[in-house]
Image (cartoon, rainbow, N blue to C red):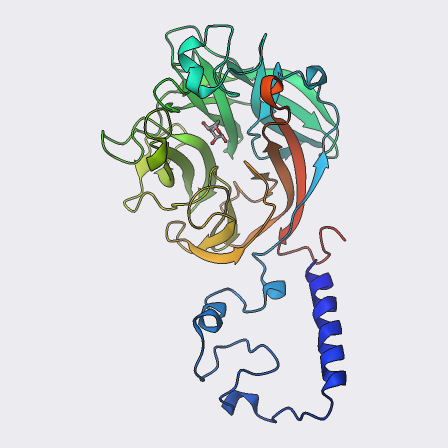
Length: 396
Ligand code: AAL
């Protein structure tokens, strides 16, 4: 796409210069008071409009040169059964895929209920068989694939524990960490139907010696809730661990004021919690929330810092941002048709790299794959060119 854009620009430049062949380009555009014909790489010392000024706040003023810009294409996955889309089976919120012994692994929220969800606003009517939301009454399942498109569902990785253990109602939205030869699953643990008092849940962890399990329970409420009145009170969602500066960095989201009585004040924030050991204790970053936009967490090592894709929520939704220190993010690009709950395949998420290389594909989900009484979600693959090592456009 970058090349296509270049081609397009090239063509328009050609036709423009052909039409205006009599107009002479000044020899030294830099000294002109007029914005030059060729986009400068440095801010020119001339009066600039607000928009022209802003172009020089981006990694590169021309979007087609911007390594943190991409478009996205989507591919339907093969191998998952959805009961003909009747809404009783849902798969959503995939983990980032990892590659182990010749296979990709992914973990995700799976719901297999007698009926589709009745909706968060009817959460009081949910029973131990009837789900309120799409992520109520779920377990964490996993699947493997050789090519990232055809997947084989392997079974449950972490199931709901017995009541009253944390997560007895639902375990959902997992992500993976590989640390010192062990595998750690981080996930949301619900003790009530989502929607009853909000989307309230803490984060639990299970760990294993192999991605095939078995998984041992490693801890509950690992990211401490904020106190009453604080932005992350009783809601810690979408935990996403990375290894950075020799430590575990977990980005998480709180959808504060989400349901049931405060929807008009709804907002999201993302926090950063840091630990020396995957099981904690976790110390929260003093500047939390470190991000104020983005419905789920999609963070990856990029060069010496951390990049993120923010979608759906907040003033800066549909942007890619970058923070040298992992905490002070700045907009790097504006993007469209972005993957929801994007979980990129980043080979260096856990290598403590100082030279993060990005990614070319990942998994994401589409919600409301079936409407009304068939409501469910599906996992899909996305391709893009957010890798520093990849020079071909992701699609043509
Ligand atoms: C998702 C995630 C979390 C929320 C819900 C299920 O997109 O943000 O996991 O709790 O929606």
